[in-house]
Length: 157
Image (cartoon, rainbow, N blue to C red; front, side):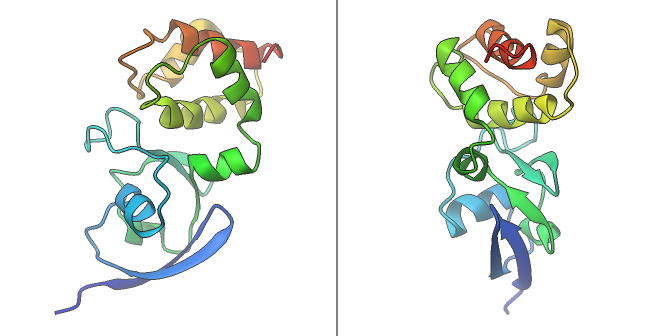
C-alpha cells in the first residue's frame, strides 16, 4: 500500500515536487532525497539545533517537522543561505573568531545566528546566549561563537 503524499515545496529557491512518506522528517527529506547534507541530524528530539532550517522565514528544527508539513512552503537550508551570500559576514566572523571547531553544530548555529541578526538591533551577550540556547556546541564553549555574533551585531564582522 502506497502511503506517500504528493508534496510541493520550494527549497533554496527551486520548486520541488515529490511523493513523500508521511512520517519522513524534513531534515531526512533534505538530506536523503535532495542531497542537502549541511543540516545535520543530532539528537532527533529538537534539542541540539543541528538540524535547523528556515521555513517561510522562521527557523525550525528539521527533525521535528514532517516533510509533508512543508507542502507549499519556502524552505531554506545552510547551502541556500551560503550560496546567496546571506551568511557571508557571519561565516567570516566565525572563521576569524575560531568559532567553528569540529563543525558539526556550525550550520545550525549559523542559521540561528542569522535569525538573530535579522532583528537588526543591539543585543547584549546574554541576549545572544539566550537566542542560541537551543543550539548545542560541545567544542567551543560558546565564547567564540558569541564573540563572532557580537562582532556582526556591532558591525565589526
